[in-house]
Amino acid sequence: MNPTIARLSAQALLGRRRGVVLLVIPALLIGLAVLLRVLTDADGGYDAVLTLGYTLALPLVALLAASAVLGPEIDDGSIVYLLAKPVSRHVIALSKFVVAWLATLALGALPLVVAGLIMDSGNPRRALAWGAAGAVAGTTYSALFLALAAVTRHAVVAGLLFVLMWEGLLGGLLTGIKWVSIGAWGRQVGYRFSARLDDAFLPLSYAVLAALVVTLGALWLTGDRLRSFTLRGDE
Amino acid sequence: MSVLTLDAASRWFGNVVAVNGISMTVGPGITGLLGPNGAGKTTLIAMMAGFLAPSAGTVTLDGKPIWRHTDAYRTIGLVPERELSFGYLTGRQFVRANAELHGLPDPGAATERALATVEMTDPADRRIDTYSKGMRQRAKLASALVHDPAVLLLDEPFNGVDPRQRMHLMALLRRMGEEGRTLLFSSHILEEVEQVARHIEVVVSGRHAASGDFGTIRRLMTDRPMQYAVASSDDRRLASALMTEPSVLGVTLRRQGGLDVSVADLGAFAVRLPHLAREGGIRILELTPSDESLESVFAYLVGGPA
Image (cartoon, rainbow over all chains, first blue to last red; front, side, top):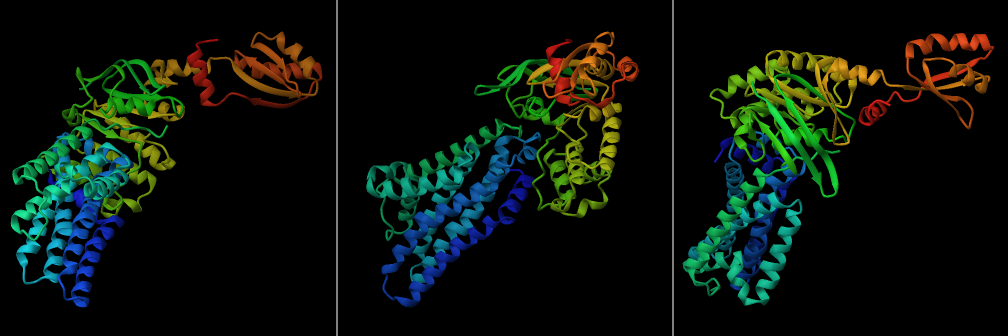
């Protein structure tokens, strides 16, 4: 972990327009929770809002945060100023990950807990279970999307397709995808805390291990890609 | 004292060969890397800075390959051509971040030293996005100098810098070269290179066209046959008169009027032309050099002496 890289990444994350979008997403989710709390009294909206937050808002926040800490610097080549240093590329990857990860936890996972508490303040365990699911999935998403930003310039598009098609549409249609779906792994962890969440029918140890392997693998890949970063001229 | 060595280094992108089998040694002192735009200078510097793998051949720093060798950056300082995009930082913050990333024992002192070297102490508390081109260039230089590197690579450092700041930058580079640093900078402008470097390497179309002392190469460039366009009141008579001159290598009649004259000895030609015209009663209407562009100089160098 390199504090200078982390500080610069945090400034890049908050200093651009993306920073505003990052705040809008959780604000919308919490606003929706407040609205449903005021307008309805039944429990019906709870799962709908949390599912929306978990399957859409959380990965979007992770995608925006992860691509903001790395994507623009690679696009405009200014990352050479960070890379022309005797700093391990994996340390650079880790430092950037920590910034994106903290942003994802604060703006993706924490709002799930807040929304849950707003809609059902009598059952904090249920809200915290969603938060745990969000923390696990958010961690893995951040690492994966960071690697995506290091590998391709079209990381945002590729990430969106992954979230909407793979995790969303196909994951809903084909139950076998749960074995390779980040959302399902996190949900399984959440289910461990509260049975009010859907059981993804995965062994808990598998879900945790899979999330860990993908996170570490993605971080290693990010560092390796940075090690092979190629500077191309305008000519 | 550090030495950069390229041994038959090539780099291609798909079907395009950007650098073609270049071997050179860059040692202490200033080396100018001269070549027209698109000659492969940036590709070469990227390979020397470890930001591009050679497709064939080797690029080494003191015997060790630079590609994927992170520790090389203790020795190398790089000033890329690319614009600084850390506009949200002040100059001081940016240079200091570079000092911290190098793990220097006293990054604060190193930052102030580097800022003083490039004379940027005063505007250092302004945000980079308020800087002029010359100030950005100096901020980049300060960030590359902060760890006192033995090797400094600069890609087109004078591009877009106003004349006064250019003089200042040049003096700075000369001083660093005299200190025994290995310093290489690229440029597509002959006069720029002339003012800073003794030793130059010329690259054209990805190939190594010439290497050596500036004076030798300058002579190679200026002693070549030069082309002039001449318009006169009687082109054919002037042409026949010109052909009797030893300083003239050839004359071609232009379809739309006028002559193309190939000249070997510029001095003699300049003296003889008015004489010939007066003797023949011919009026010279126009005399212009037709290939003063650097590209034609380079083309000549690549083609070898005609």
